[in-house]
Length: 551
Image (cartoon, rainbow, N blue to C red; front, side, top):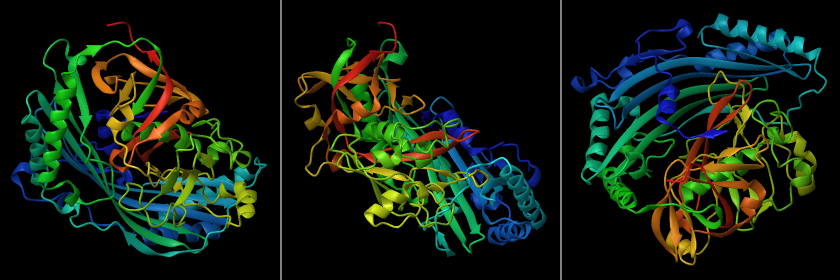
């Protein structure tokens, strides 16, 4: 259900036609700039159209929905600019491009039933027509709907907010991007048998959210989706068996400006990572019998495993069955019975938030609710779910018993403005051990086991109750506390609850890693970025399976 941010995904995520043409309704205006960037000092802003008044258009849609008979309506209106700069290891020339999009999505309630319309034409007439169409749609569905929507209260808010940065990426001369990706490649090439590829996808989006209850906010979001890795080869034997690819650790998805990727520090990180990749590539290669072993995960790998199983399992719409015919359900259901019960190792406490500089940082979510920090797991015990205004009412008895208000945690997310808002996890943070336990410390007492580093990909059943992690590259064998060789063709098979209860040790703050992956949901499937910070961890007695024929 989850996938890595592959090169193909990176390119498709930009939605760049690279043809220099405008589509109807200005859904996309794109330019390929690879040929001109080296000879001009112009920034991306020079190629973008004048801004659209997203607040005014949102107001038109809300007024029209109210006049047409909606009991409630909310709208997201967004103008987004994209800038891509990337150099792939196997290609000679870098790619540069910019694009501009205008999109909106409008929800309305009539007789407790949703209607939804989206569009890409930035005009008052288009917004008003969409509002009337959405009301007519909801009125028709209401005749067939038995369960009515209940929204928990949320105070109306007004205002503006922006991700503040020192250097707007769209104000930087495009030639500087060529120099940046060139510097990364040079830094890796200083290490024999090593190389690097890097890419930077920047979003700058001005998004308005308005409701018939009086909310009217505008946010300027600036987000970086980087894609950087260092590749090293042992230089002997079939290439696929001797190549190690490691992510560049400081290139993580975040709400930041261009200043986050400038300076010599990044080049130093690349060089050190290249040295590590070469060292790992030259380890002897071997096999491992299938069976049950202790396994150590680094922070990034543990984070992706946690997010792909537990994190999305805590989406309350899944637990209520709303996603049964789409993204799936969850083994953590029914929620009112499971809250207060142990679901993972008591070593795990997990906190959710959308604070800066995380990639999901906002002042208000896509229903106009201000997100808050909240715990979902406390010492292994389930204490809460990810909620929106529609889903939070299902936990009314739990919240009232605790003396808490019945309200949304601010987890309503429409990754694109034209998408229907969904329950999505904020960034999850697994709290590290209070004592300083290193990755080496976790490995020290293992006589025979595995170390998993820089690996991703979690495949689960439709309830997230069981699955496997088929590793695409090398994992490492531990013998008497030392990493001795690379192992290919293995994966882990697990039952989710048992797997997380088998965690016996967590690393300290120095082992924290960052995982970011796409999760799929809805009908049709929509993707959004899920993000987790987690320390390294030691699991006992994990089922190791073979994923290929013997070498």
